[in-house]
Length: 285
Ligand SMILES: C[S@@+](CC[C@H](N)C(=O)[O-])C[C@H]1O[C@@H](n2cnc3c(N)ncnc32)[C@H](O)[C@@H]1O
Image 1 (cartoon, rainbow, N blue to C red):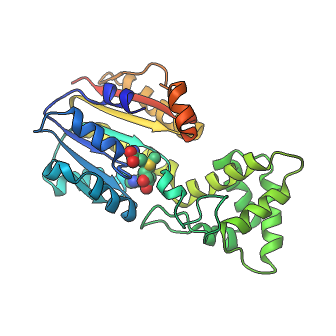
Image 2: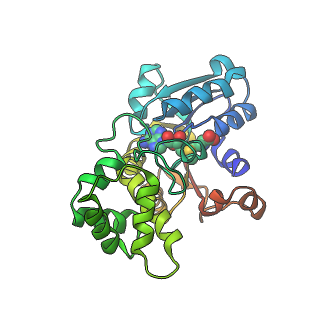
């Protein structure tokens, strides 16, 4: 949804923009190319390996781009380190990148790599810790709450029974246990829900999103915008509620009355984009 992001995100030019989930730098590149040469982008990400690639991908922009390893909840602190008080736009493209999905950190149920799932530093637990040390009720609650998985209890029970024999080390070992807990043919959906739930829990994704949306609006200049791309209903609900609150406060305008979804051709090219929803607000004064 690059064109839609650029359409809603960019107002003031020259300006300072924050790509708070810079990943490999795809959106930042497009933002920088659509702005005049005095405009800058500060890119933040938790993932050091992604930032290394972003640095390479964005090298042609020189000092117009600054990359920082950090959590987007700390955007105010990060900006003040660079002497920036206000910005003209913030983009949050949530979740994980295809780069991370293909990494050896256990994000994918199709891979065989050690269960980790941490985006970067700061996470209290890895997926390995959760799967091997958390109690059955806690596991079941995680799968239900963050994956909306209806077989959460059966899956948690199987995990606890299986780890009594030996610890669950890899993503494919976990995938087999999950698949064997599901009656009938629904295993693929359950697999993605369970892996999503673990990732959301390990990285405190919903907590980080709520915190970010409480601090970011105060950083905006007039006509400054916040755009959020979310990938599941748990995230979108948080964005929708917070934006509604900000609009009711009188200082903000909703640029997207309804969330914007990708077009058919984008979904055909990239299946991962099919659940994307973009919402944007603008600071009036
Ligand atoms: C969907 S990808 C972003 C892709 C990026 N827009 C691009 O064009 O390459 C999401 C990124 O957000 C990062 N991320 C997730 N939670 C974060 C947080 N709390 N703070 C900073 N980065 C975070 C992930 O590490 C991942 O690289």
